Length: 104
Image (cartoon, rainbow, N blue to C red; front, top):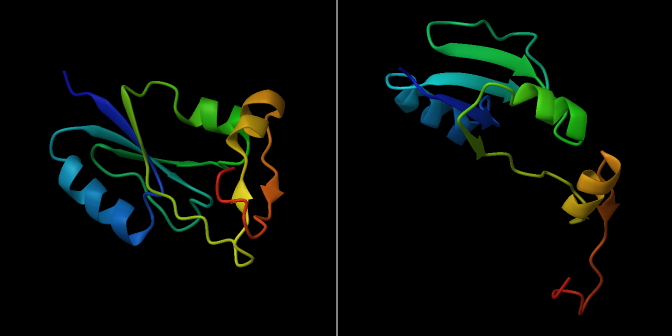
């Protein structure tokens, strides 16, 4: 029986190349912000997902045996996302690192 892998960032450069190799052995749930120009094919199912939403992410990963996170946060101001806020509140908050805050 084929295992299922969720690939967050499947429409990106790295994600699409990884997906091309893995689809020979695995069923893939490909996550993207938009599936407007994506079509399912053999062993690949596209799902639209806002990764900043805990509920959407949890639902998009249903049925998966493994998950890969291949998303680059392209926040232009250099902020970072506090994952603990996602776990607690189901949403992400951008934070700006201040000089000397590297340990956060």
